[in-house]
Amino acid sequence: MRGEGSNQDSAAARTDPTVIAFPARAALQVGFDRIELTRILDLYGRMVAAGEWRDYAMDFGKDAASFCAFRRAAERPQARLEKRPALRSKQGMWTLFGEAGQVLKRGHDLAGVLSPLERRLMKAVDG
Image 1: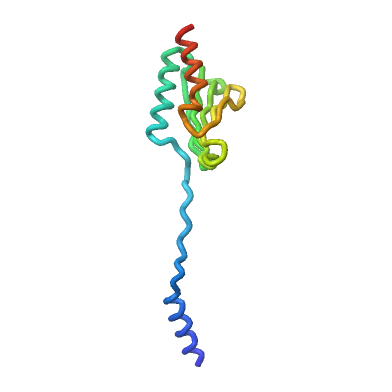
Image 2: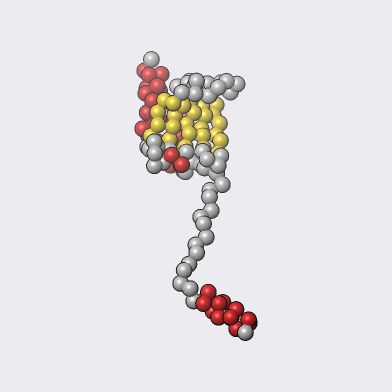
């Protein structure tokens, strides 16, 4: 009698229409896509040509990706651009930090966040 009940239970389990989906795998690291990286490196190249920057560093972590630009390699970054996808729906995933670590600009659009650096470049080229 016990064996018959277990066969009925397993048959009922096979016909249950509920589908359990596997959870989505979290990204191992955050990075810049090709368009974002092209825009960032284009600005970096123009700042190097203007004599403002000499070196850069990139860091790719689980929560954020960052691009740091330096006047000299042995000092703090003059500017740090950070991409944090977790903040996409809140204040925007892009943040621009100044040399002292202050937030210069936040936003949803990379071009808008880079605008203070673009203005600094225009002043450096004109002056």
